[in-house]
Length: 230
Image (cartoon, rainbow, N blue to C red; front, top):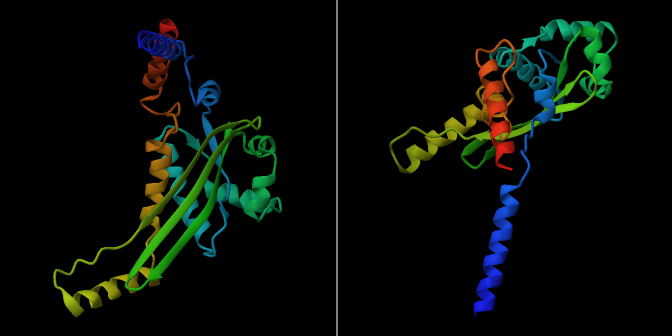
């Protein structure tokens, strides 16, 4: 029994020592090193059947990136210039070398967005609207700096306080309205916010953000403290 306790104690001590010596891990180390100032948002790749989806998503991105402190090239101007160069298909644009895209506009990085899901499903007396977006930021040298993926859904709730047939009828009407005119924009904005602000690796603030200096100072302090403990 004493031997077993000794073995357990030694194993625990070894595990604790290993944890204490773990190197500082920064999942966005490359991003923090590059610190892009300007972001080029290229046309969105659409894997859904809704032809309006890419335009809807594209229009929601510049404002949020601007609020994060980045210079964002006007998306409509970018789209027009690319089309002038014979680049009409987003999938084709996404296949181009990022270094070429960035150099054409003088951008530090390029944001690629893919719509994997943009649907409204009707089941019995309810309709669920779903979006699924993938985000990638790649620097002007072709190095991937940041990725995120967000999948959100929304099912409108029936506000009728009654029961029985009246409640079922109200639910059916609510579902039919959502199915006829799905409200994608709130979900799209929420998905963008989740990716840029609240995800596992939120997008760092850009140089035009009030929190830029504070963010990188705190990052440096955390790194120094972690290295001092090793």
